Image 1 (cartoon, helix red, strand yellow):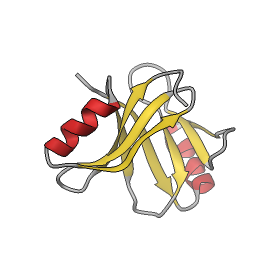
Image 2 (spheres, helix red, strand yellow):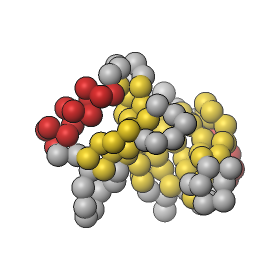
Image 3 (cartoon, one colour):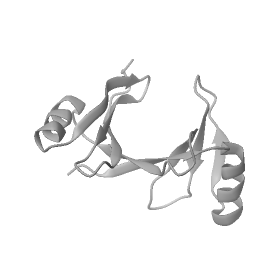
Image 4 (cartoon, helix red, strand yellow):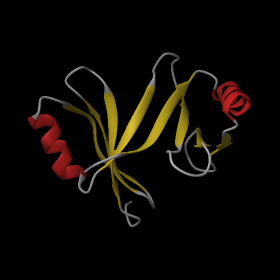
Length: 119
């Protein structure tokens, strides 16, 4: 059964948000050393999930990422059930394939297919 495996926050000021979550929850948040303006969020050891933060509009909410075995198969299921694919399948080099989708209520989420050879 597909499970939530990641979350992504949007922040107008990611550095300020990182300081807030570090001070309040003790999360370890570091700027990613990659091509995008992005921060990686480690929420701790044990059960739970980690996430990331991108610069965006305040109030944009949190986007969940759901682990699937095939982005192609699940985009068909999503559209067949009345949802939409907002951003089609794309490679996340070294990690896998992802697509940004929307449910019937306008909630957005990513689906992610693990594939270290992607990209």
